[in-house]
Image (cartoon, rainbow, N blue to C red; front, side, top):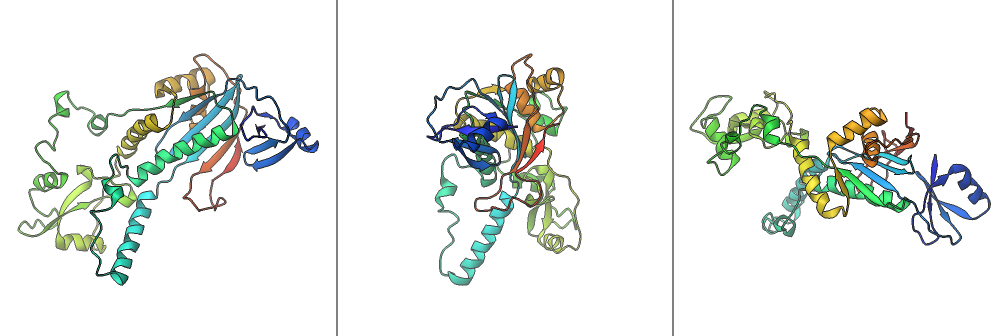
Length: 338
């Protein structure tokens, strides 16, 4: 196990063995500044000579893998779990806000159209912004304990249309089902022939319903939308009947594409790698099992390079700001790499 070292001025230095860290602590030349991961701060001036330190990151929509290598040794490995409850929290906040307005400020006009955050150019949904911030947060933490020389980041691109329809042709990309429709709601009503799909009523008020709720991982894809009359829609939400559906296969693929584009703008300089390269190095050269932190180790390595992966793995769970509970479930714990 390695101890991470920072200088008297707070700059990250090269890590040292735990035996050397104990000697520095006993002699009063260093003090502990963080226990997990174990980090010490030197109390004397020293030359900040560093070696080449390569950091790799395996990006994702649910998990982030990160690793750092120095001279053929893995000195840091982590696997961070990204928040998936931001959308649900935003809906809850909206409910409280509307309830408070109805109780105390009924005279105020609705502000749904004049919020600066909604009109801001380049605005991202809070759920996506949270995922991007998690990647930048892990980068910032690694750079606070190690003098990183270069970052390698695995990015990915997915053909969403190909995932939904594996036999799609060349011209089908331009002639999709929603061609000539300006809104998805108009397409759903046209697809269902302006009839309720439960009672088959036609000359009545129609609603477009999410089969799998957004809070449960559903999307606005046409396959997850259905036309219902107002009466059947109310009965469905009252639990008098149910409509079975399946979760979207493209939700995380879509988010990865957004994360990739934003990291190129906000991450800084990094060397871009791809999944097929990572898989080849992990399986054929390093012979490691499939985990996010092992992928990060493979990202750090060059072609044909072999490293010693006998290092501690830090499992993290990114929680909301102000939530300091870290003992429930698997959060910022430690686990020895197999």
